[in-house]
Image (cartoon, rainbow, N blue to C red; front, side, top):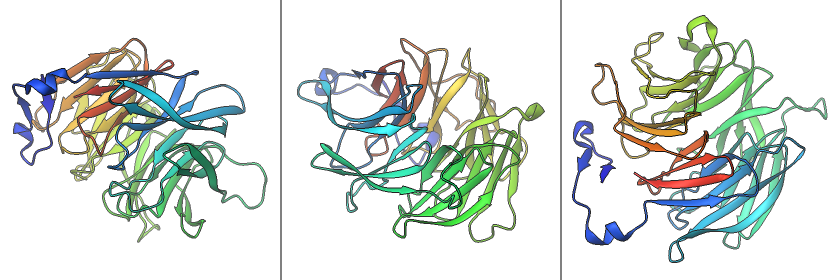
Length: 349
């Protein structure tokens, strides 16, 4: 088995090694089937909650669901620990970034609003903690497309909206720190860099824009797509914050950007035969990224040869259906989760 290892020396970080006998006995793939199409998905980061994920339904209706599932390692299957109703399909779900488990166990979701949920009793008891709404003038809202939870300071969440704005929230005060017009059209995703001040966003205007909370008078356009094709997703490399990845709407490749070289991609990962839907940087290695899409493939790439072209992935996994969502576990970096149709699978990498 080839394994992706976190290592300061990227070129050496993918080792071919003889697996120990006891590792060979472990399963490489576990599957859970939900009662509905899965869209939102998040790996818990707490070290005391291994193999725990939150899954959101995609039902074209007001009434949707979120389930918390956890792997029973002895039985070898996923068990539903708790669930709750959600208005509209959650556009994104995230657990609080809290590996050390020193903070309250919280889950956040976006849809019509940003909501925080208290998770208690080993995920059996889940209740709404707060609904955050910055639109004081109207009972109607502009739907939120995505959000990111700041890893350095989990008191900060940033949301993106179809109304062209991004909002930075103070969780403890339960109020917006700032709201800014980020793009000329809808904003589709937002991501924090390492640290608390810098974030970036992408949207329907085809641009990646970088912001600094210490100076919001200015933003930097680090990339504009050919013919201003909308950019749907954004992922910041937390191990090397010079690198960002973004995906173009209905496009089979992933664009890798270096913020030190604005406007020109440093790489294009072109291993998919159909559009890419999701991507995730390795949480423990600065040079590995996983991508997944409509061709039912999850691919892992090593970008350490940059600036040479990156032609082929180092690992490929074929699933049974179009992959809508992908997560790389920060607390268990040997595991990647994918969602396709009603199924969620975790794969050992």
